[in-house]
Length: 514
Image (cartoon, rainbow, N blue to C red; front, side, top):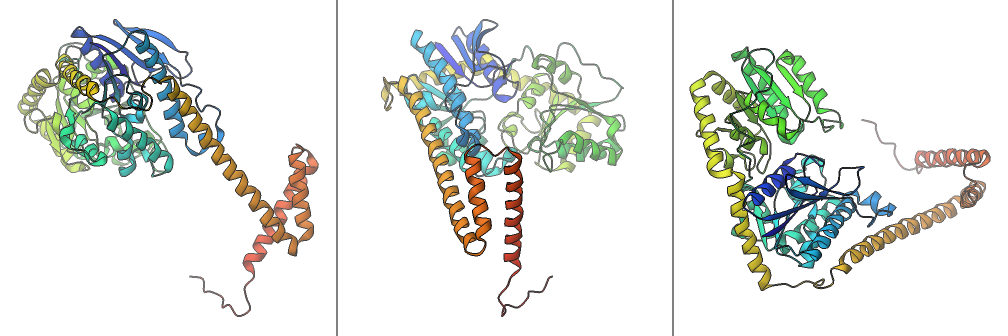
């Protein structure tokens, strides 16, 4: 089959997160089965569009289109939605260009940020949408500080359109499939479960080990330093583990984030907590490292921990298992579907530092059990998660998507794909114009309403206000005279407001201050 994988994220230029890692493993798994695979991804910020070669797989890097690029009001009010439209349209434009030259049999996109929106509404190729974590879940559970605004709801809406319009929807876990089915109002059976793939040859127990440093038993955490990854519960568990296993050392690999209270550094926050417990010397922090260097760090660990509050299917869990290491995960999300508790790892309750500590102590002090779980973890990866086997199952789903695609092809853009990006640009332009006109109209009305009210009691201040507005309109706002007048008017307006607030009717009692 000729297959196009569309993904904003693809290593090494645009990340080694879950989406990027999945897409690369899937691409090479599909290629190993003899398929013609093409990837369309974003270019690294600041770089131009280009075509790269990833071991025989062409990767077309694109930059966001100018669609909506100069819309100031929309950029201010809806930054996420504007980003989605600019990047999704760029990815689709390149896909459409390649598809016109040589048609694809299947196109595969993540649901995140609606990368499949334009392929979905144009119905040009059988579409498979992969689930990661839809925006609706970020809103519902306030993940990554996402709030319930029109901007975020708009992103969630276009994601839903892509998912509902896809020929096949896949999920890496039943846990996530159940949430999405409920959110979309469809049956769970309408979503196919396809586990995350892994290169078991690259992530294997054999190979180079990372330098250990001081001797001792090692516990490894890999992930961004943010609340959702459960890093704070790991930090809280460390003193109890250290008390039972004095030679334990912790290695934490991951980027810092400014998501602590007050938008401050999480790394600084957890280092302060470690210092208060006297365990700081037992913890080593390492910034994010290339994917190719991760296996040697997994091999150097005795136990790996994945204490996430929620993860649909964390790659850190799968990578550690593939490297033949005992893993402790939580029951938050899909991790419990990758680890069979008591057979290929341990599952502890989410947000439970005590249970996490007990699990770590158990595996550090029981070498026989640790090796049993590690061996079973590697065996489970080879049987269930090898990327060629996952790719084989995915090809069958592409065939199912093609069958459904041939049955129904209803789209207002069938045969008119060149209009879809024009219409999207026009939609953004009209939205921007609406916001601009509304704000300017309301501002104009408010200005004159306040000025007329002011004229009744402070005519000279009202005249000064009108004169100041007129001078600014003429472009004289930067002159010293206008600046002094502006400052004087603002001071008098504030004084007027304060005076108005202090006046009370003669018969109104003064409220007691509590």
